[in-house]
Image (cartoon, rainbow, N blue to C red; front, side):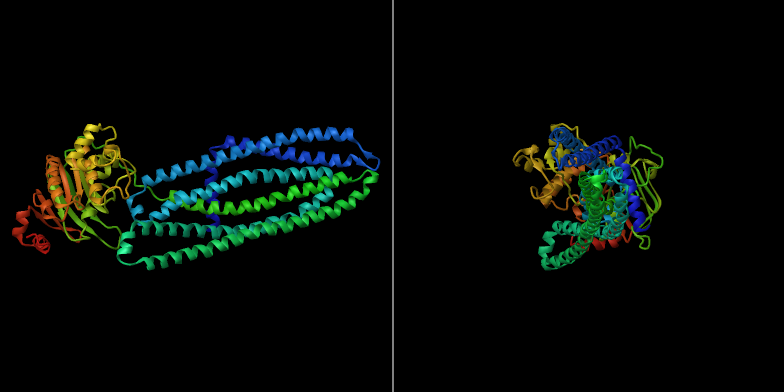
Length: 582
């Protein structure tokens, strides 16, 4: 799709959002038309007031009536303009509010493969920076385009009623403004679109470096990070300067054309004013016409400025709509809600790869009975976490089939499938809120007593009570809690829900050995009668498993109990010996 098609497509979709406020748009147009027409009529009244001045003196009686009319009209114009600005602000904010809602809702539906592959900073830039650019463009567009278009049409009508020959001079010169603005707007759109993309790249880089600041400092990469930042920042600087240069050309170029219009009106108007004595074009008419020439050309200057904002808005809108067009998670085929799950899991000849040309899991087969405790071990990159992703349907298998409760998981709704799993990941996560809210994330209606019981089971109660406000302490994912404390909260979160199946992916990796022994005891009681999958490296976590799966290069190369695998003296035994636990 060409850039021109992209721009037109973005504009059409943007107008669909605006269409939802069609009533306000119409009312705003009425206010704009009313304020402009009354302003133009005020110009007529001023011209008549000028004509009250004659060689014989001033006709004060006639002038007084004109001044009273002007005094009445001006407050009405001010009220209509205020109402128009109020309505256009409402239209703009309503539109971008719905746009943000759609973006965030779509974000929840996108597969993890998209989230994993894209820069989080770039996604954030689209949600925040690009939507703000659209908002600014809409505000200026509605406020100035409405009044500008109505002013141009209105002044033409009034000028034709005064003198059609002079109006023709104005109309002939006008297309130059459109030609200049059109050429520059194309240059602006391309540069503003490039600028938005680089902003997203810069936001992503900053977000990445803030998250990895300890690592940057540990390896002494501060200078390297600064150099990379300077490189992206310089590209943004160059692109921004060019975008602003092109946009800055618009106003002076159109002003030059508008000055030609004013000069033409002045020359031809003065020649016609000579006929005033014989009842032709009066001095008041000339005064009125000159004001109309200014009022007629002024919107072109304003619209040229608006075009710059609109180019930026359309460039940002095209990025937003590109995001909204990303394919959501595949629809659930059978729409079966998983109920009364017995915890049986069957993996039948499953293959999967993140990248088609790089196979990861091939011909994987496994049968897990209800209540079995399955440990998964293997070297880094062998597919342990990938297997968890497939069980949870974070990713869909390339071929083969996974069944839960004897039902293919592709026929089960994702929400009901995931509701039957409790998962604790190595990467802990807490959100801004109270400790109680964080633990009750999966069961918002849980009582305080239930939350405390879960925290005690996870051995988190003691440190929680030492916090300033105990369970009502507000925390974030930053510095209030240690990594180990956040992991204990994650474990308590699962212990509160206790679904029929559990996934523990290095769930005790950030916990000290003494606390781990206590947690392991809690896990033993928690997993009793529940199917559980445990990814771990520590011998203490896996040796009591009913079955240990040993993975290598996406295949299960060995399986059995701890003792059985040691007796085989194969790959598992080699792993245990390499860790000094044998």
